[in-house]
Length: 182
Image (tube, rainbow, N blue to C red; front, side, top):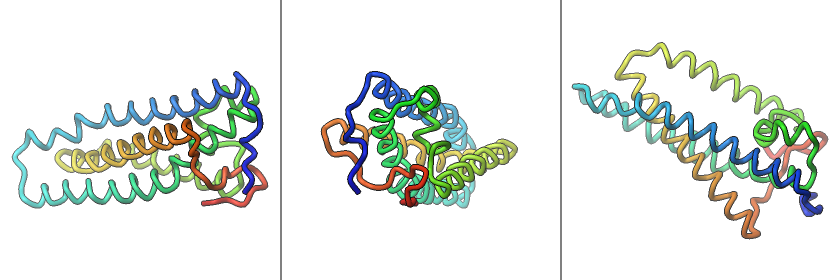
């Protein structure tokens, strides 16, 4: 693919790209900071061995499935590619809603829109469900989520730094009419 992001960047586009990536990082960081105390609460409780096995299992599972597979291999590089595209192709709406644009929640291929909205709504539903779970199980679940979100946050930063030094992640941007890269 000959990337369209080679177009000259404008100040508005650069502001939009920064807002998109930094806004998303702030959202993820806020989630990690908010969930971390709940994830650490089981350490102050008297737990059985199976609780600790579940805790470690949750962390390992979420590190792999959410952190590595979800963020590092898919979401994080796509966020940066869409941020680069935004820098070169700003519109007022894309810049104002840059974090949502970088997440693929609008101005995206049909497949990307379906996947992005499904994942976002699914995560929201799971968050609401997990809020009703009692400790230590909530902490066990939240520990895995904190690890996955932290991995994703670091992956976005690493891909952003690589892009800034001229080594942007390759792949589909998932624009309307473009075949989705999943």
